[in-house]
Image 1 (cartoon, rainbow, N blue to C red):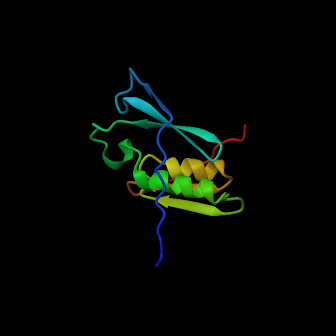
Image 2 (image 1 turned 45 degrees about the horizontal axis):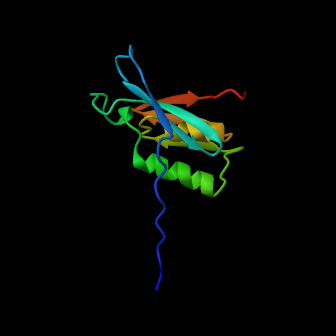
Length: 113
């Protein structure tokens, strides 16, 4: 019989409230793959799917970290990008990134620091 192991889903490490932003009320911070990623969120927004971080995005971030996946010399497209957390992480892991949300495709380039 095959036994399935269930991992606990990654949780936000901290958050910061935002006072003067009309779209987002806070920034959720997540630690993954050696990075701290801040994502603007508003669970009460009418912005739809792009206003919260989805558990599937967190699960994939965990998978990338566990398997030590890097995207050097790879082109990555994220369809239905939501907050774009996976696009941001893939770019940080050296991928040439395109993110698609609401029918528009935008290129994401994150400078090396």
